[in-house]
Length: 193
Image 1 (tube, helix red, strand yellow):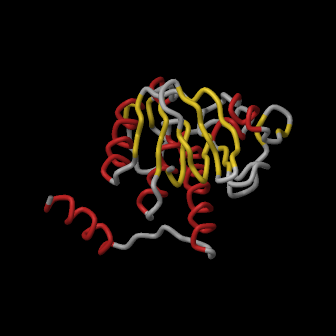
Image 2: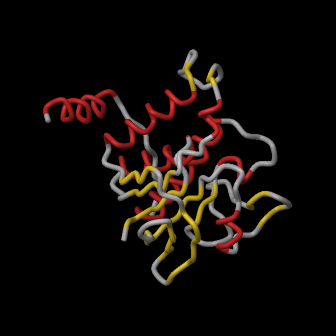
C-alpha cells in the first residue's frame, strides 16, 4: 500500500506527487500521458518565458522522479473504490491501494463519478483544499472547473491537495516553504551520489 495514489500525469498530478513525496509520503502516479500540455506552448506560466508543453511535462517528470515518486507511465486507471483503509484503484495492470487519492484526469470525471463524489452541475464539487465529498479523495484541475482550464491553476490544485494530505498526516497545518539551504541539501546530496 502506498500513502497516496494520483491518477493523471499532467501539472496537477505531478505537482501533487512532488509535494507529497518531497515531504515524506510515498506517492504513486498512474499516467497515460494524455495531458493537454502536449498540445500547448507555454507563454503564461510563471517562471516559464516560452516553452513547448511536452518539454515542460518532461521537466516535471524528471523533477518528481528525482524525489523517488513511483511514476507508472502508460498505466491506465480503470476503476476506483473506497476501502476500509483508503482506496483501491484498478488499472490495466496491477491494482494500487493507497490511503489517499488524487484525481487529476483533466475533464474526464468518470472515476469521480464511479467513486460517488458529489457534483455541482457538470463539475466535481470540492472544498478549498480540493477534497471531494468522499473523505481523503481529492479532485483537481479541469474536473472541478467548467471551462476554466489553465496549467498553472491545475498545478496549484495539485499542491493544495498534497498540502491538505500532509496537514492531515501531521495533525497541523503544513507549509512547503523552502529556503536556499534546503536546495543546497537536496541538490548537493544528489550530485554526491
